[in-house]
Image 1: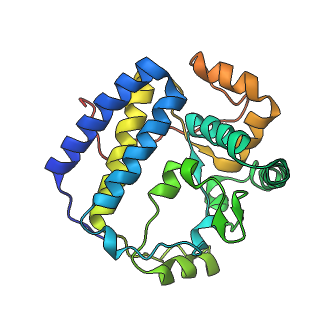
Image 2: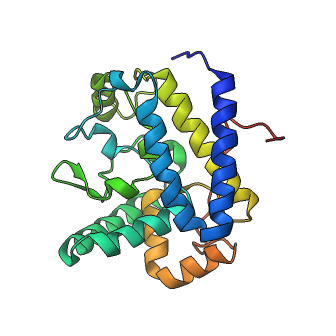
Length: 238
């Protein structure tokens, strides 16, 4: 789907988010800065002029079976949210599904992983149990017609499906995430992308060590290799 980009709006958004995220990183640290950034992320998406066109709603969860990449700071935030907000029985269910999913996905090349439907461990009874802390990738997955999402679920190997997106929501979400990631990366923290389940499993193996490594600006997940993600919305000079 080809879209027309409002480059002035993107430049303004990325400049604002980069500056604010950088200040919050210095003052409060990466996890707290992420939580503040997620609030702005949701607010910006909701204010996009074409947001009313979105088909996404509670109870629609085709995309909760798709492959999701996360950054390390998101993993730490998610695990903290689970520990604070969810009862012990739900935590046990989630951790069990993470372990099982990780076994299935750890050795799959990305080309095969993205063609597998794997239920997100945080999906329960048709709802996201970590909605406030859900990954940035999930926040940015929006469609104006759920039929395309359903088709992608039913035909995971079909690479020709092109779901309909709202252009302003798309550019707003992408620009926000790129700006926050740039701030985190320029502060020296790991901003590689990791598959959700395998990263969570690696962190759960030793949560304290994972957090310590990340906060001391070292790779936090042992031998789990992350992937560098090129910015779509920022130039090298930003």
